[in-house]
Image (tube, rainbow, N blue to C red; front, side, top):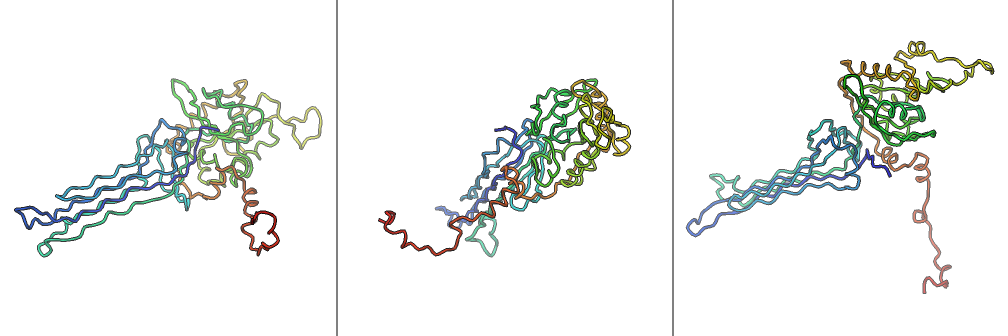
Length: 398
């Protein structure tokens, strides 16, 4: 089981306010002491706190209920009730919170030590001391405390990185990350080797650096839940620059790039406003034969990155993570894009989520599985009059 948890669904409840006290002062030598009921205490709030030392929501996976304490009741002699204790939820930077029932966006935590009040505690009720007047000198009533707020929320972690790697499985994303940074992602010759996002710090000249994120491979239809589905597409939203990777062994580099771009557009159209660079990886391997040419020894068409760049309207760079070809040029291009003014601020609107689809993705259930489950008829759902007489005499009714 992986320790990288980027989705949790928890029930939160703030504390209710304490009731005000209704009390009339009585003393031996003060027969008309008057009202002296104190106020109730404030209920505790549920607060999100950004913590840069956390990189996953693992600590919240088994904490299904988060509840603050209630405020205390007021007392006599204008004694105030005790305030409820706030419940602080530590979350990694980049956590987005949605309503667990409707999927509506609630808030997000992006910075270290940032505090966001998720549920506010109820105010304490006023004691009867506040309601004394010249015509009502002995009020025999006090305010109750405000009720608690409760809500089921979905927390999603969207990793914070400068550069995000986007590509099909086995495009060489993990290999590139292992070459340009100290990260050690798993590398193998089968699809979906990378199952969780991997972060690496890429060293640049003069002690400068930037963060690169390796996102699990995307396939056609990922925005509809195919492959790893929507589970990791959300991590691309935080990246300032998107580095698309298509291997040189592909039969049609332009078509694969357009498929990747289409999946991002289907997931969130705002992703198309981000800076994009296309890296043609595995240039040390002989390109795939051109299917439009007749079979023969010379039917391999060399990759013209300059022509591709003109057709796609973005910068196209040939690289090889194994031989080191074009790696320095790629770092230079990424650094230039990262320092452009329009790429400095990473702001993106969070659209409402489909709660049913998200939960199905997190549970590892496909759309076909859900359809089959919905179409299943169980015995206790069948409306039928059972003839119990024919079952008598076989022991179960004795």
